[in-house]
Image 1 (cartoon, helix red, strand yellow):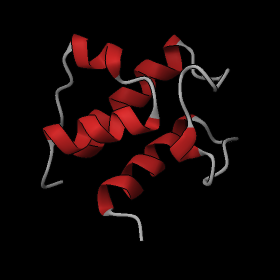
Image 2 (cartoon, rainbow, N blue to C red):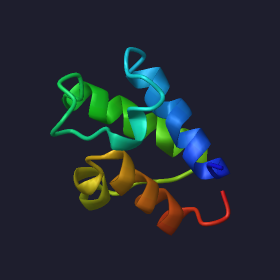
Image 3 (cartoon, rainbow, N blue to C red):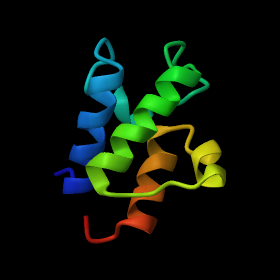
Amino acid sequence: MPDTQSELLIACFQKVFPNLSRAAIPHASHATLAAWDSVAHVTLLSLIGEAFSLDIDFEEFEEATSFASILDLVRRLAPNA
């Protein structure tokens, strides 16, 4: 059963990538998803920042290039979210 952080993150991805199936979201990355351009990246991380009340710094922003890496970031920065 997915945890609350995963579910909230999936919801953010669904808003930015509405054509991506729910099953594909956990496997999504900048390298595998053509729609994940710079605008989508900024939009996604802005949504995630709002959803989890996070202030993501530039270095973390650049490293957040997949669902898995973003979930790790969220768990590190907002462990109780």
